[in-house]
Length: 266
Image 1 (spheres, one colour):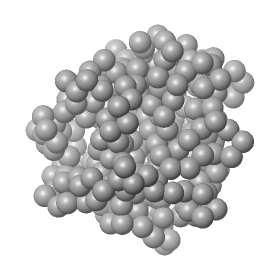
Image 2 (cartoon, one colour):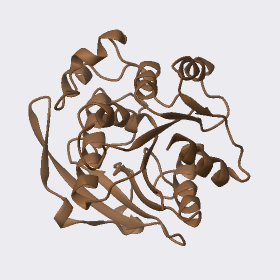
Image 3 (cartoon, one colour):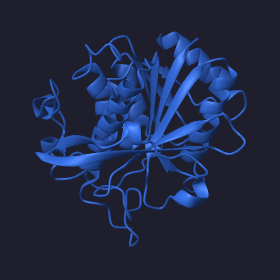
């Protein structure tokens, strides 16, 4: 039985319907029905209604401190089940990064200037929680810019961890969903164990969406064209890097395509 860890930026119905959020809901359920075991994570965005979504804190997993750019940030884990499905969702929360805050931009459409640190906190929060769950994934599937740092950590800082030593990483590419640069402190907030900012020297100084996704591609085992309209340069980059690439499978029988792709990566 395969074990697939989904690290999603968006999952319906907790956030508005988009290609990404609907896939975030439908794909884990479809993979369960294929006979795999799954775990699913997303950020606890400030727009999520905790009462309506029936979220509750998991005390035994919460209150770990993550040090990012020399500052302690408490990790809070909440959980809920998507109605009419067998999918349970773990939410990564923190007052500084998510409380009363939207996704990539604020209410006026201005890009948050700490999106880089938010992505680092999310990535590390998910991976620390998976270790605490004592659950070893065969495949980690990352969807959205918020999860794009995960492949780097898996292949560098955590490559010798028993939980992740043999894990394969798949990254989905969507139409650009992050405007502007990531944040001024991104490179300073990234270091963790053997992952150093030196790793980023071959990327642009001002990290933007394209460079973030190139970073994800470089450290992934497989790349998915998750919707129509994905940047052709990124798909070409993945091919040139020798990555396995799954073309957009359409909306019919997509579960078969993903399930087979996971097997091919393994």
